[in-house]
Length: 198
Image 1 (cartoon, rainbow, N blue to C red):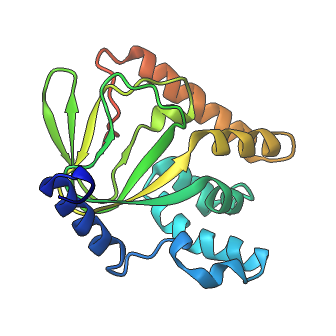
Image 2: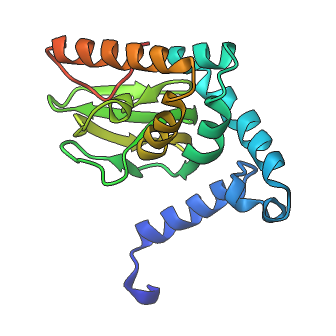
């Protein structure tokens, strides 16, 4: 027991490190990215994250329309998170300091709602979308049940980019329309959840 770390935590650290070097590369783990040009970094981020964002109907529509907003979103507001089994992503009632929408790239998670009902969440599902459109407290707890790779869309980064593009983009009306519809549906919903509706 070095530094009074329990065996269970030591095992989780080892499993997580193994997952991190298993080939699931993130931009932060590739040292050469610091020396390539900024336009190439933008293109790389777009290639990586557009493939994930297309699993969400609203972002798929923006991608299909070749919206000028999508490259900056992929480059400036997206990131990857690697998790190990039993890692908790968010808890019931938590109001995140740095809110993010999550998209499951690989692995399986469990979402436990306020009634204790557990839902299995797998690839291509998105969670906590509400953080993009309103102030949000998580309505459940999300826990990894295997090694998981999540793409994350930072709500503040997304908001800042939308603000910039609102003045000069045809996507502005589409974004406002979608946000309004999302909030109206959320307000009508008797049971609010972080889950998408597949």
